Each structure stands twice: as C-alpha cells, then as structure tokens.
Image (cartoon, rainbow over all chains, first blue to last red; front, side, top):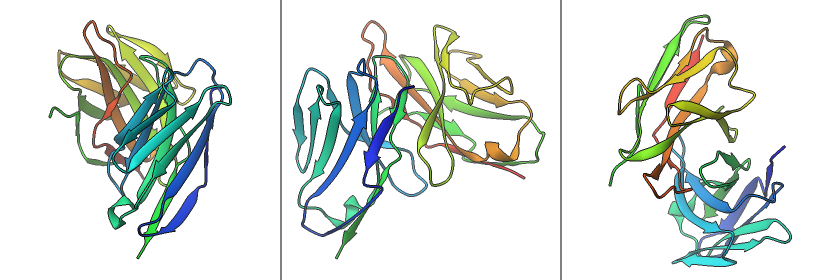
Length: 111
Length: 116
C-alpha cells in the first residue's frame, strides 16, 4: 500500500548548523508533499509544501527538494535555532486525498 | 486567520463506553478528515468525508467508528464502544474551498482520548 519512509528518526545538530531530513514515497500518483512541524502536545503545523510540478521551493531558512523520478523529497533547515527543536513529519498526498505521514524526525538543536 | 477547532481537548472514558469527538472545520472548506496519533507515533489517516458521505476510510476505521456532519458547521467522530487501544490524540482536518479544491489540510488542536 501507500507508504512514506522518513530518515533519520532522531537528529541532533549544533545551533547555527544545517539539518536535513529525507523521505521516500511509494505511490507514484502522489503529487503533493507537505512538511509538518509538531511541538509536544500540539497539532501538526504546516511549515512548507511542494507540488510535483516543482523541483525545489524555499521559504527563508527552510527549503524542500523533490525528485519525482526517484520518489525522494527532502527538507533542509539552515542556520538552525533553538525554536526549531520539534518533531518533523514529511507526508505525501494526492489532490483532495488523505495524507500519508512518515514516522517523524525528532530534531534537537544543541546550544 | 480561521482555524479548525476541536472539543473536548481531553476525554477520559471507561472501556466499552461511547465517545463523540467534535470538530468545527474552517468555514467554506469542503473536505473533512479524521486522523489519530498514538503517543510517540506517526499521524495515521482514519477517514475522509466529502459531500455528506465518506470518501475513504482506513483499516483502523472499523464498525465501531462513525462520522457525521449533523449541521453546517460541526463534524463529529463517534467511537461506539471504546477499547484500550483507542487511546490516542485524534486530529480533525479540513481542506478545499468551493470550486478550488486544495491539497493543503489544516489541522485542529486535537482531542486526547484516554480509555481506562
């Protein structure tokens, strides 16, 4: 069935360094790839998304890349700050369809 | 900015009891979803709802679960006879303005359900 794999499960980076989270998806019909940030006990918050007609998208310190051929997509956070500490979920979806989430990456920003 | 709201924020119930979780999606949205997240795990799809009927449901969404949109604003998830393994955070989400369906789903704050 549809599946999204996410790596790593835990990531620790020094404040100011970059963090990269990688995901793969199985359903070649997926065309929408959101990334959610979830702080403890809170709702998933959309931080950036990318559609299949685009290879890269950037929003300030956050960027996402998509390789449709390989069915890979990645999240890049530059100049990490303490408030970036959270669990990040990648996901894949088709229009007006359910979102399939990855298992999440717990990102720790070290002082 | 409009948000999805959910009530209650927390619910404690005895095994075998019925619970109803309530959601108010963003007005003008047409697509509604329920997801659940067991503590420390990923968010899992339960059911999607469009045009007053279920569009898709997952294996988790068995006969003990039902959804309803009783009026123009509320969207409810009912668990008829709760089990211990139903303990989780339940998120409602909505998407899709009329005539311009959108993929972006906006999540509510969740209801934490604890079954004892």
